Image 1: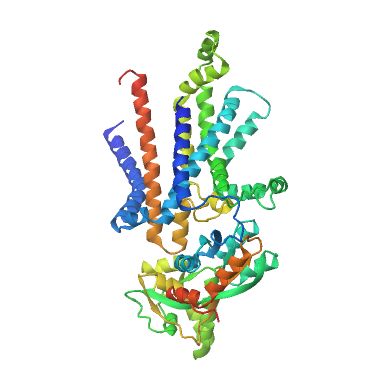
Image 2: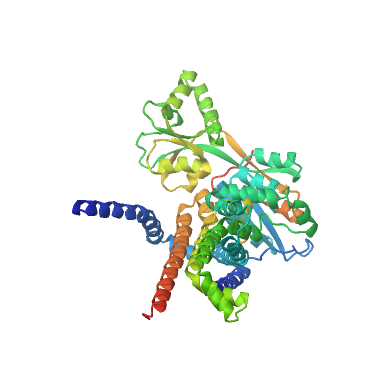
Length: 274
Length: 268
């Protein structure tokens, strides 16, 4: 008896939730034909670092393009690419690198070539009180400065090493500069967010992160890395071959890579891709 | 027990309660104090996810009972070769990491999965849809219900069922009017555990259903997505809503049970 009443309650909850959900977002079903301009829904698979920018971009794009709604799905770029390979219903894939879109192109899962739509440079973050007194990039190799870095497999590590190599070229003793930086590393984190968190908590004196991470955090100060020694991570987007709204998907990607998209992306710390 | 032993037992017990309570208190406290809970309650992302969580967990519970109850009856009542193997198989999702469950489900229902040819013919897509969320929840949570139901049904005195049969009750009537009420507490406990496991389901969902707003993004996925996107406040708020919802159901289930116990003992 009781289990029956619980099941009845479960069905009632399900019905209520279905109504609440239907009022906001359409449930899965056959897509309307692409020719009907009033009902296009694009599923955007976007890298986690793009989340804030994409939420703002969605509002702007839905106003600019009546009848098109955007559904966002976020995760790490590599996870999103794998999901698309496994049949996820993405229309556009916006990656935090150029490697993962290339994977989709090579697997025959892309419709057209990847489009670079944003760039992300590196910056140095320090706790707001700046305990080690870091004022220029070269200060990170001073003895006793506690550097927080990421693990070897994390992309930021490769970019940070390039910046250190570029800085070393300007130093009197290049190999000594690289070695001094390595000696100052006190911790290696799993991802960039964890690096930012350690600096926010004051567990380290300085770290290389993406400019967008520095913009997103209110609890760190930044020491800029000059363009001459900086590197730019390029973000590529690509339309997925299985998209049922290929024209609309290409239009959105072109808009994001164009001036309107660039204006929004720059508010979140991104740069133009070139 | 000596005074010293009983005091130290109480201290250890108290410390452990503190350990279990502190993270929850910190989470709710932060969500309330910085005002993010208030803004999260009206955020469309959180509301969509809450509605989706309620919808999918309710449907998962229906599916779990519809298929799990017959299985529990078979396991409680029948003896057959290979029963131990089936029981172990049913329990397996409890000990499997959910990411393993998500991967395994992809290998069955995915685009290149075992069932891909027949699903293609039918034009059905399971992975990365709302259906996939329910499939993942049922897979990881049904064992909790089946385990509990099997134990409860096995403990029912068969003489009572026979007595009902002698009085002319049909098998369905016996099951409804004797077996289910007598196993009621175990069935209800199984339902609560199974529902709570579905509500908290994360790993299998994100691998098998993805993280698509309004479609597959349940509340636990919002907690992860906001954290990954760098908005820790929104993540904390979504987590607090999840804690409050789960806690409310556990408390309600306890109240319901104690009321029934009082009914049964004639106290109320």
